[in-house]
Length: 475
Image (cartoon, rainbow, N blue to C red; front, side, top):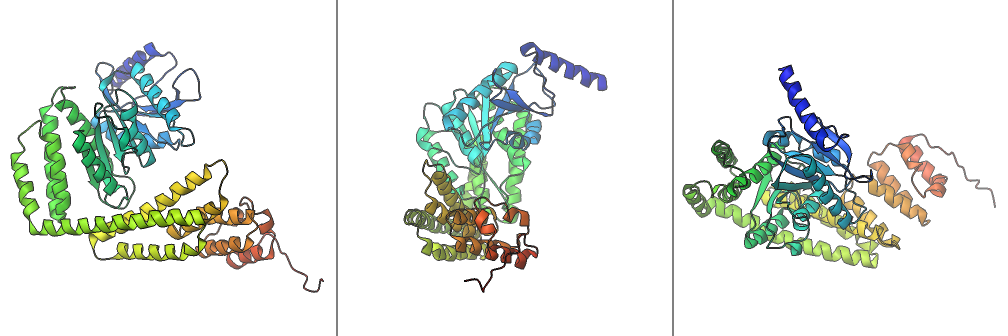
């Protein structure tokens, strides 16, 4: 067995060396920082599955992460890539540079990989999570030859850019507690209208990342679509295995009583397998389910939650814009009350309102962060607006210490020591213990030597750096 494996590896190594004497790829491992061109400025990482060989064409999944963590992003897909037989590549993208430049880098990375490896030209896809997912949704729109996108927890970046003459396959993977869930449902209705193939895979739990099985399922959907379009030969055993897995999923969902999820999964199954087999029996079961009293009750409850959520989102968007524009610090109390109301939804007994509560919390936080990014990127930064948003974030996300630091620093920079000390004490009440971090906060040099600052450190952390006393008898 060792000799066979060695021969396989050497065959692979030699084949790659034909294209580039300097490129060494090892199957089953992520190779980082490969240059896209002669310049070392733009790089990419790559992963080839252990079963890879040069004598067949392979699908390529391009993983996009706009924060420059391409290896970490790539590593989340490797197990699924092994299961489904996909080559992975991830260009190094940076959020601080323009969308156009990142897209050019992505296109160049695709060209590089396809020039080195036997990639099936009709089976190139993009994938990403959150901001990376939105970027991935633009890749098949802006780069010729990309046939689909896997978007995890993110809706389409810009539906207005979609070209009906350039259809692509959209697979959304989302949690019902993710604030993008309703947006993704709206996107799929648009894609249905354009006759673009699309499916949404729902997953449970409040984590941001789905399990490996969902990533493998998304890749499986791309493979089934490729078989349906005759880009690759139909594999009847592969199709039947996938179909039986989906039937088992339906039975599991029936077992937990989630009839809405059952109906949604049936819809996706018919869009996937309709080209391979007669789906009349499943269609009949779905029709009967839609007539079921319990199903109708659940559907009404979910629609009511969607309606309430839509109205609350409009309120939050309007008031945040107004408060930022007018520096309405007095309205922070109103926002605190709203977060209390959202927490009531989350802790309530109604399942669809609980999901709505989680989505609303995610939406408000994302809205605040978007505003922060916009203001911070302006040539002349509006520090009053930024101060309001930093304070708001301590209400929206009270256990995220980052925004306490930002508020303390910005207030101290503007000589508002009272506000700095207030948020410093709130931070310490939350259990923050890093004394050195407090004494190294940006723009707090004068604040740090005040008696009040050091008294707070002594009160909560016992050991202040400066022992400053005020001479009360001094005139």
